[in-house]
Image (tube, rainbow, N blue to C red; front, side, top):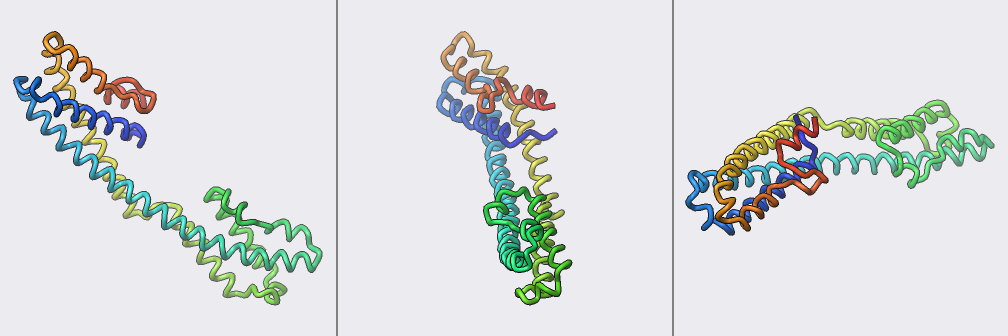
Length: 230
């Protein structure tokens, strides 16, 4: 069961806050059995979560950047071609054809990826249907080939390549496993902190508040967040 990124971020923030609180109050927990070992494990796994989280974010950013760059290239080619087609259509007094491919840069930018591909395909089809007269306007078979190459490259980038997708999935699975392990550690620490309920009420209450997850509108513990997402 995966948790969404915002929830992972909220959990990670809670882990960091809890770790900071415990470090500031080690004199109060030093005599609790096994607590120092649990605290070390908590910090160790938090570091692993931070490293994996950054790695996953970088992988996603790289894929998005590559796709965006390909979309810009395809957009530039389409806009250059459509200006030529519109000129031809206006000269021939073919308003239907002119409107069919009358895309602006702003129009193209607002399109979803799927709609963008559809728009590019429409332009490609128009070129095929009007190949001979469009030669005069600088649209050749080479134009058609380069446009198709740009469209195909963007379509391929719309979906994460298999290798990269598998790596990101594996990273996500490792993160979920680490969060589960952190919750087990925290639950053991919770039981030990109960020992301090009467003797250290201020620290006890601050610990309880720090352990709650509030960053995503959810108010509870990690395990409860998993159940609420099911």
